[in-house]
Amino acid sequence: MQSESLIKPLMQTISHQHSKVRVAVIQTTGAVIQYGNGKSVDDVLSHLAQRLFDDAPQVRLAVTVVVGDWLLELRDRYSYFHKLIPLVLSCTTDEIPDIKQTALNYWQKIGLQWEKENEEDLKDKMDFSATCPPLYPPEVQRPGLGCRELIFRNLSKILPAVSHDITDWVANTRIKAAQLLVVLLLHAEDHATQHMELLLSTLYRSCLDEEEKVVLN
Image (cartoon, one colour):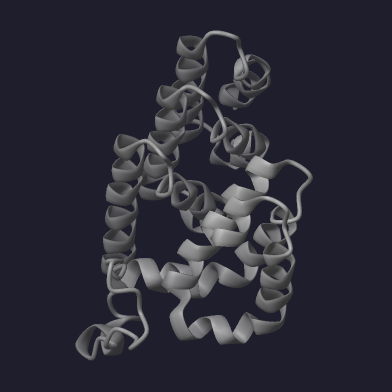
């Protein structure tokens, strides 16, 4: 498809010195993949993930919107859930309230849409919705069933990458990974016990981190 030929020049420009250009590239990438070959997601994923560390809030917001739209509208989105969900969830911990709220709004829509699309499969859980775990943080709003189920079903594919990033040599990457891990665990609830070995080793390593923000998360 013609769209595939556009990906390489776009990715070569995604780190342009001007933030407006970076925003335009991200938005264009979103459209190219949305209406072209969805398989190109793999070619742009690492570049978009890197933009989550961009100093310009409008760039991070652009990533949030593009990834959020993909998770709602991309034809092959089910195949990419485990790759795209970490990006949008990472945006829910952004320091800029507008980005954080945008990501949360998208995530809620994504969960509700998935819940509706899989209503038959979730019927029992919807009829007898599990009560909130007793030790759930009171200041945190519990995610909806669809959001929780998406994490339940993709956690085994997401956790290894988070565990890897939490020991990265770049401090900001470790901080981002630690923040994401918290969000994942709040969604996973008792399903996290299935991954306890990896989780514990990850938590042990993060507790020994020299970066205070990693330890606090």
